[in-house]
Image 1 (tube, one colour):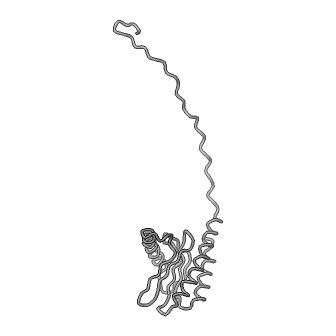
Image 2 (cartoon, helix red, strand yellow; image 1 turned 45 degrees about the vertical axis):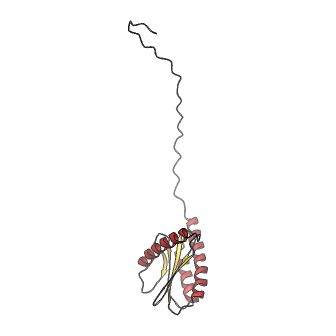
Image 3 (tube, helix red, strand yellow; image 1 turned 90 degrees about the vertical axis):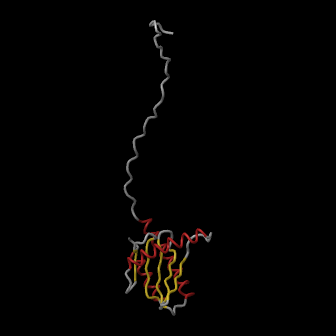
Length: 160
């Protein structure tokens, strides 16, 4: 992806703004790592789990009429996992310690999610489209010709 370096820079800046972050990952909605800064965590596994959690979150928001997915926060004994929408094709997942300021986490996570979404979309628009195949030759429509009544010879060989 052309925007990988820019997305990684955004993850580094985010981690500098929120010192309680222990990891940050940008992934496609189908679980592919776009960029990561997750020391001690296997990024491909986290991206896959994020995609699975996103799938459940989308179903929950849809079933309850809450609109489009925006964010998901999971609190564990040792901290937080927060996932934010990053445009229509990507998500941002943040790992934070148990002493993290959740309000600050949301504020910065939402901002970075928006920025990463813009970077991913700009990179997708800049990708050259595959060469278009030539249009198939137009087919001439078939028309029916008028039929004439068939004459079947009668038992004596005469036409009716």
